[in-house]
Image (cartoon, rainbow, N blue to C red; front, side, top):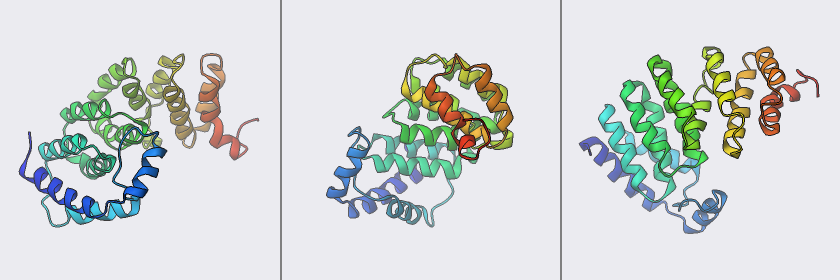
Length: 235
């Protein structure tokens, strides 16, 4: 349901975005995303500045405001609106209860592509699960989902956790989708392992070695890339 704050933010955002539209740049931006979505043509630094101006002076949102604003942005055709929603959620996710995972799931499974899915996974789902450990059961459901974007989000949600990463959960999720032939899953497995290798290199090297035949070549390469560049594992 719309809220007064969400409506105010969307009105301000729409006005500012329309004033900054660049149709020529929009075509190039859409092309970079394989023409999955239309764009307004606003470069990231300008968009971030606009978003900062839009929220200036407004009250802090509650969970209802966050859900209403994000869902309203998701209804807009241009991708910049979804980016704005992700940024707003990232800033205020700490105000959300565990119930917000349902909104996150709706966003991940709507207008799905790596740009928003990865941001939601790492900056919204990750903090939610960290704050509400009972949501691990949701991650266990997502990892087995038919929608591979949910599985990707489950794999990536600990990417920013560093020493707070649950390695057993990470490794379990990687193995549960290791045989998946979907590129975005294989890439996610490698990326998640690579991020954790910056915290516990030995654990990642051991995991990749022990499960060499189960992991795809892409996952193995991505997992050890950071360590290879630093001469930390044999080439």
